[in-house]
Amino acid sequence: MRCSHVLVWVDDLHRAVRDYRYLGFQVDYASEESKARHAHVWFPQGPILELLTTPGNARHFTWLIDLIAGRGAGRRMVGWAGAGEGFCDMAVVSETADLASVLEELHRDGVTAGRPVRWVRRRPDGQRTRFQFAYPARPGLPFLVSPYDPPQHPAMSCHPNGAGAVTRIRLGVAAGDETAVTRLVGDDPTVALEPATTTGVRAVELAGLRHELDPTFLHGAVIRRNSKRMDIIAGISDHLS
Image (cartoon, rainbow, N blue to C red):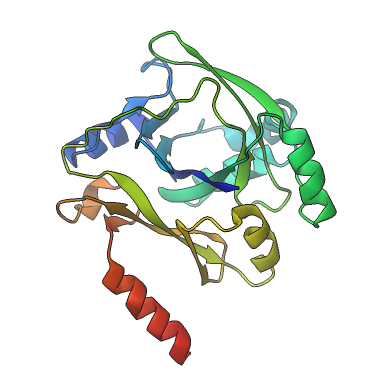
């Protein structure tokens, strides 16, 4: 499997969309703007960024969220909001449209997850997007999605700030999560695993970005220019530690 998208939880989706557009990103609402809770920063290939918000009273209805979106969904969603704005999760995409067989394999390897949930989203242009998702029992682990049907990546994307692709996702991994995270992420070269006190996305690097982004408008996310030099420094640090 490989990374599908990195999620950024925001308190006000419309304000976040305006701010990311101000920073030079093309941002598309996932559904009708007035009702949307998700918006996407697309790239022609590879992982994308997803801005999302959740209902303010979600913590009172975790049982209902679990019923709709599978066991563990309520706790995960409440956790997104509880941590405040910023990176809240990461999704990995399977090669098959049916997650049932993937979940069976993961279970045999010691990674348990809730049932696969079939979902249909109506885009602003009226097109229906179908996919499945499933949440691992441990809330910090990346969750699973199936490929979008029909595929959603645009043939071209035009971000005025020059961003062309996500080239590095720095994923912190807590002690005890290493085996499960490695199993979920596989050999995705985009994802760099780093020891951390909690499992979660720490930073995202973009190719083509012409200048560093003002963090004031990133809503807690750490998004920066791709830097090979930083990879070299990290490698030397790991060697010396």
